[in-house]
Length: 166
Image (cartoon, rainbow, N blue to C red):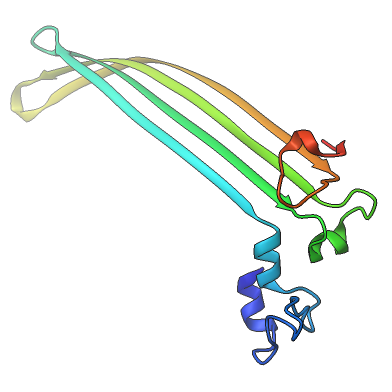
């Protein structure tokens, strides 16, 4: 975690060794190396909409209909490159490198109708009544794909992995 690293790493430890390799620091993990060799990317798209119409039916009656939708699409890719420090610590030496792709899509909609009655009575008094219905529906789909064993750090498509793990 780069935010924790700010407080736990020694400020005098160099990022690179003299030979150009990453310095593992006293923590055993170099954040610069982890960011470069363990890329993670996530995208979220949201859309929300609401439409309504209102109609005055009679003197004291109003009808309102409302339709709303919500859509969310989330995708994430996390690749631990073969030979990275994290792969050496947590990976499988016989099948280096791992990748996880996951995400979900959600679509829901709501349709509501109300009938409102308001009657003004004498003396500043009012009487009212409200009746309504509502229908909702949601569709949710999710996926997770995980694999290990990548022959190169330059290509991280799931179909070249040695083994699917999830």
